[in-house]
Amino acid sequence: MKYILITGASTGIGYDAARYLIERGYHVFGSVRKQADAERVQAALGERFTPLLFDVTDEAGVKTAVSQIQQTVGSSGLYGLVNNAGIAVPGPLMHLTLDEIRYQLEVNVIGLLSVTKACLPLLGAGKDSPCPPGRIINISSTNGRNAFPFVGPYSASKHALEAITDALRGEMSIYGIKVIGINPGPIQTPIWDKADALDPTPFLGTDYEKAVLYTRDYIVARGRKGLPVEAVSTVIGQALESKRPKTRYPVVRSRLFDWLLPQLLPDRVVDHIVIRALHVKL
Image 1 (cartoon, rainbow, N blue to C red):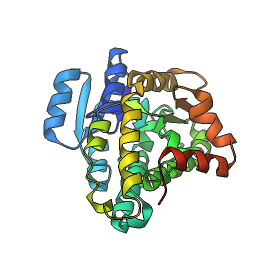
Image 2: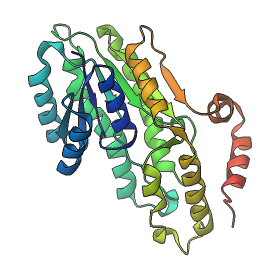
Image 3: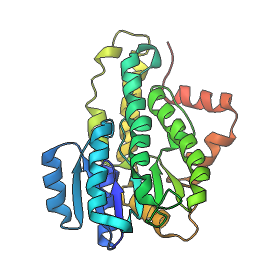
């Protein structure tokens, strides 16, 4: 039996990845934050899914959950860790509180590192580890390569994740552990319903009011027209099973327009396109 841990498995990419991998014979441990979600997902996915109730920002809770995993997997260890849990804190940096920005980084960066470090012994990290080398898959974003107005904290967290993925890939190579980044663009998940319901009140009356409202609607519309969530699950499967996985997998409709061009064009050109598209003006 091959065991996988997926964080943030209650909905969206995490839930569908769990479904996809269970159908292919894996046993999936999935983190959720509410007992009701644990019961719902287990009922839907069956006996090959084991819910773990913890928040990635709760270090003690993470360690307890990993101990539970260890009791089940023993020396088989984890075949893979999929770091999927994350949040997005939207808004102009000028008007976001430092606590809001800290929380963004706490979940998407520190929480991810907390889970990863706790799982490393089960992934075969250590000279005398009885567990075979596993794989670490970090769910980043196209925003991990490009930052846009009003998603600065989220982009910052994903840029940090790109750096962590690169550094960890080199550091884990001595143990044979492969570290892979996946960079989805807009994906059809329930997150867009939450985004549509975001309260714009903190930004009303500011110089950014019109741009924030327009950007929210623009991003939600793009998300709802995004790739099906199964596209990410398929790539996660490839990253787990390929003998020579890529270091990064962009999951986008157009590799040219959604991935390559924003990185190749001069910054000023990209700024001009984005500022006009999002109506960022007084």
